Image (cartoon, rainbow, N blue to C red; front, side, top):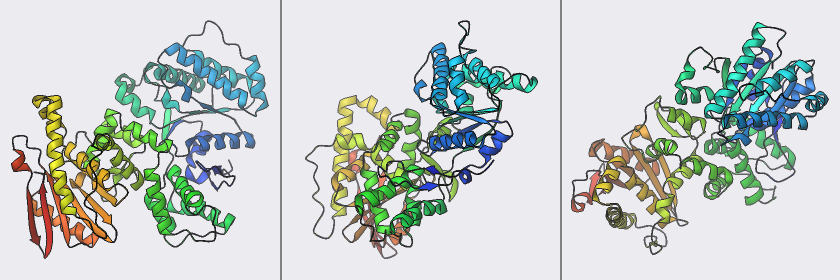
Length: 536
C-alpha cells in the first residue's frame, strides 16, 4: 500500500486555511494489520485524531482499489442497554455508512439487503457482514469507531459475532467475512473486558476477544511533527516562529493533537488577530496556554466531567495534591482507565510516579478539583495582600489558617462530628484542595499560580508570581518526611525560583489535636535563607 497523503487537524479553527500532517508515519502498522488480515484494537484519548485518521484511511483504501473499506461510528449506541436494540442499531449504523459511502456497489447492496425476521440479537451483525462480503468482488475492511460506546452484555454479544465470523472464515474459505476489523475508541476494550467481565479471560466462546492480534495507540505529535505543522503556517503567511517557540508549544501540550492546534489558534486568531508581520514568540505561546487554561471550551468541559467519576477522581486527586496515601495499586484498572482517557502519564524521572499528561491539563485538573470549594467561598473574601509592587505572602497564609479552621468547623456543624471525622480520615486531601481554592479565589487575576507535583515525591511546589517577585510555597502532609527533609526540598525549590524566602505549609491530619496545636507558625533560618513553617 502507498503511504497516506495527509489529513486535516484544523480542530477548532474556523478559518479556511487548514494545515496538514502526513498520516501514515503516525501509525504505519495499521496498513500491515490490514494486509495480514488481522483484527485489531486502536485506542487513544478523545480528540487525538482517531476519527480523522480513520476517515482518511478509509478513503485511501477505497481509492487504491485493492480492498473495499467502510467507516462506521458506533457513538449513537452510548447508553443503549438492551441487547436486541443495540444490535439492531449497529446494523442500522452500518447501513447508514453504506448510504454515505462513495463506493457505488455499497449503494446497490444497501437496496438489496433484507434481514430475516428470524435473526436474533446474537446473529444480526454477523448476518449483514456476511451478506456484504458475499456480494462484493474484493475483501472488505471495516473500521468501527467509538466501539467502546458498546458496553456490558451488548459489547459481549457484538464481539461474539465478530469472533464467530472470524473463526468460520479461517476454517472455511467459502465463508465470507471481513478481511480486517478494527475496533477503535478511547479505551482498550480487552482491558475493559478483563476488569468488568472476568469470564472473558478463558479460551472459549465467552472470550470473544482472543481474535484480536494486536492493540495500537495513536501517539501524540512529536516536536518535529508540531514544527512541521506550524511551519505550514509560516509558508502560507510568512509569519515565523522564534527560536524556542515550537519547543515551548511541545512543553505545554506534550503533543496532544487538539491542544497543539488550539494553542496555535489562540495565538493566530486571538492574540495577533491576523497581524502576520510579528514573529510568534515564547511569550505568545505561554500566554496562549494560560488563555486555554481559563477558557470554557467543550474539550475541557469533557475533561472536567470525567473528574466527577469516582474512579477518575480517586486517581487524579492524590496526584494533584501529592498526598502520601495512594488509594490504588500500580495495576489497578482505574489507572488503566485514566491512562486511556489521556489524563495521565508516567513520570519520566521515576517510572513509579504519575503526572497529569501535560502542563495544560495539570492546571485545568487542579482548578477543577477545587472549583466547588472555591464557589462556596463567601464573596466577602477579597484580596487584601497585594501591594503596589509586592505581596504579603505571610499575611495571606495567616488568613488561610483562620479560614481553614472556620471551614473545618462548618463542615462539622453540617455533617456531625462522627461523619466529619470519618470524612477527614479518608480524605486527607481536603485541606490541600481548600488551600488551592483559597489561593485561586484570592489571587484570581492579580497573580499567577504555578504548580509542580507528583505523587511519588509526596509534595506539591507552588510558585506565586506577582509583578517581578516570586513566592515559593511547598505543601506537605505531616508525617511522611522529617521537617529537615521538607526544608531541604523547599530550599532547592527556592533556589530554582530565585527567592531567599520560602513558605512550608504542613497539613496535619491528626484529628485528636486541637486547633491551637495544629495552627502553628515558626520562622527559621537555614543556609542563610528564611523559611516560614505553617501548620494547618
